[in-house]
Length: 55
Image 1 (spheres, one colour):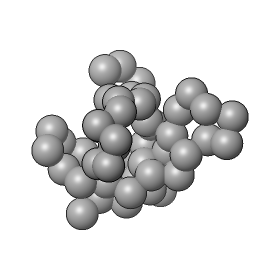
Image 2 (tube, rainbow, N blue to C red):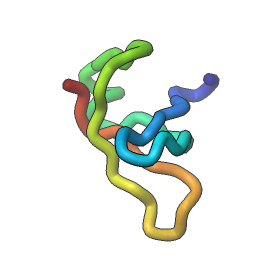
Image 3 (tube, helix red, strand yellow):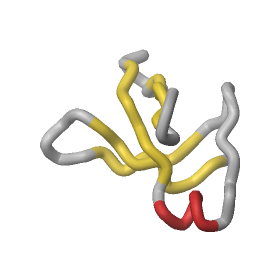
Image 4 (tube, rainbow, N blue to C red):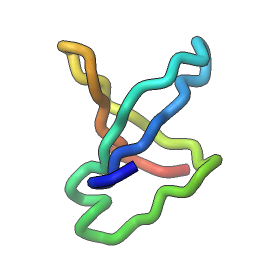
Protein backbone atom coordinates (compact mmCIF):
# COMPACT_ATOMS: atom_id res chain seq x y z
CA UNK A 1 0.00 0.00 0.00
CA UNK A 2 1.21 3.59 -0.45
CA UNK A 3 3.09 5.65 2.14
CA UNK A 4 4.59 2.59 3.89
CA UNK A 5 1.19 1.32 5.00
CA UNK A 6 0.80 -2.41 5.47
CA UNK A 7 -2.14 -4.73 6.09
CA UNK A 8 -1.17 -6.87 9.07
CA UNK A 9 -3.02 -10.01 10.13
CA UNK A 10 -3.07 -10.52 13.90
CA UNK A 11 -1.92 -13.97 14.88
CA UNK A 12 -4.49 -14.97 17.48
CA UNK A 13 -7.66 -13.50 16.01
CA UNK A 14 -6.97 -13.44 12.23
CA UNK A 15 -8.12 -9.79 12.24
CA UNK A 16 -6.53 -7.49 9.62
CA UNK A 17 -5.47 -3.96 10.63
CA UNK A 18 -3.53 -1.14 8.96
CA UNK A 19 -0.02 -0.50 10.25
CA UNK A 20 2.73 1.96 9.35
CA UNK A 21 6.50 1.82 9.84
CA UNK A 22 8.07 3.42 12.88
CA UNK A 23 10.51 6.26 12.29
CA UNK A 24 13.62 4.27 13.27
CA UNK A 25 12.71 1.54 10.77
CA UNK A 26 12.35 4.14 8.01
CA UNK A 27 15.57 5.89 9.01
CA UNK A 28 17.56 2.62 8.95
CA UNK A 29 15.77 1.46 5.77
CA UNK A 30 14.55 -1.81 7.27
CA UNK A 31 12.40 -3.58 4.71
CA UNK A 32 9.20 -5.43 5.57
CA UNK A 33 8.11 -8.09 3.09
CA UNK A 34 5.07 -10.33 2.74
CA UNK A 35 5.24 -13.12 5.31
CA UNK A 36 7.49 -11.30 7.80
CA UNK A 37 6.51 -11.48 11.45
CA UNK A 38 6.42 -8.04 13.06
CA UNK A 39 5.92 -6.51 16.48
CA UNK A 40 3.20 -3.84 16.73
CA UNK A 41 2.23 -1.00 19.03
CA UNK A 42 -1.54 -0.67 18.83
CA UNK A 43 -3.17 2.74 18.87
CA UNK A 44 -5.38 3.00 22.00
CA UNK A 45 -8.11 4.71 19.97
CA UNK A 46 -8.20 2.03 17.28
CA UNK A 47 -7.60 2.46 13.62
CA UNK A 48 -3.89 1.91 13.06
CA UNK A 49 -0.81 0.36 14.57
CA UNK A 50 2.92 1.09 14.34
CA UNK A 51 5.39 -1.59 13.23
CA UNK A 52 8.31 -1.38 15.65
CA UNK A 53 10.27 -4.56 14.94
CA UNK A 54 10.67 -7.27 12.30
CA UNK A 55 11.56 -10.87 13.15
